[in-house]
Amino acid sequence: MVELTWHGHSTVWIEDAGTRLLTDPLLRNRLAHLRRRRGTAPRLPAAPDAVLVSHLHADHLDFASLRRLPSDTALVVPAGARPLVRQALGAAAAGRCTELATGERITIGGLDVTAVPAAHHAGRGPWSRHRAPALGYLVEGRARTWFAGDTGLFDEMAALAPLDLALIPVGGWGPTLGPGHLDPAGAAEAVRRAGAAWAVPIHYGTFWPVGLDRVRPDRFHGPGDEFARQAATVSPATRVRVLRPGESLAVCRP
Image (cartoon, rainbow, N blue to C red; front, side, top):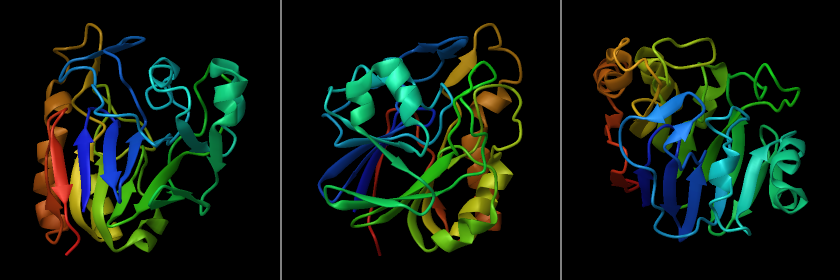
């Protein structure tokens, strides 16, 4: 069985085989021009055994949030990310990093964690020279869980099958989506390709730009339910659970 709590955006608390993981922690209520519009800043039940970082973008690799975690927390990051961590958090934090390239695996407690592809921009942002290929992670313990990070569709999704659970992005933090993202229809196709028994939509409905609350509110509130509708048609074997930030789910392997 895997137990998870979605804390909004791409921040998910995962417990499986006695091991606790935290994905892309964004533990505060404001990031630059973005404000948390649903849910509250996460209160974690314990210290995670490790943090999984999918890519360098500031809403996924948030250094202020990482500073709130215990100073011995292991960090799993894409290959090439360590210099940025060193620059922002210092040599000790860089020493806690394990860099993974696609296909590489690490054992964390009772779990095997494998870096899998993601079709998403590799840079930190237009102001930064730091680059590291974006990743998703396949977490294998009592269940097979895919944390997709942030991604568009890619052919290798079929190689992930079968999955017990997919944590799949279905939107973003603004009224438009650029390349390298999944909308609800694309996310439904992704879980079909990956053969997911269960899916939880993430990466939507949490943060919104300051001053844009009334601009396309459907893009803020709607993607989770729309994904559930799309998946019912495209991937009827997948059971979808739409969570609110702070809600939890337990999934048992059949």
